[in-house]
Length: 188
Image (cartoon, rainbow, N blue to C red; front, side, top):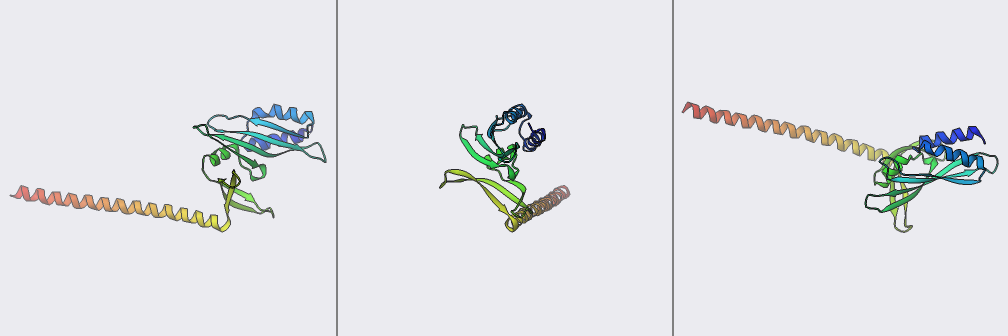
């Protein structure tokens, strides 16, 4: 067995949020010499997602590579959702759980020229294909969306401050009216 390959795969699995409990089975599979093999990651902790990790051995040498994981999400009502995530996207098991829950995640990905770019990822159900697809928003559209989000937060903050000023002014006016009415009743 190529111990360097084993250590590399362990680090990959750890960085993507998979359990160290998979390591003994990974080692056995590497020793077996199988051309392709799979490892099962059951649901753990608060996660609603389990995964099957897919490995394939190189045709050129004895090294195995972790390529994809098939994730299955089980909602509290018992419904399930499934999707295959490619390792090169760097999506962790916890992020897959968020995506299945309807949340978006932000990742830095690389284009074909290996240049980094920021992307917003969301899992969307494609009715025609009857499966989930990973939708990317990136580049100018993502930057515009982030700017709008920041602008919206700033506007909301300003609205809160304006509301507080108005409420404070109303209190002052209310106190003045009470003081005048108290003064009149005391004087009379």
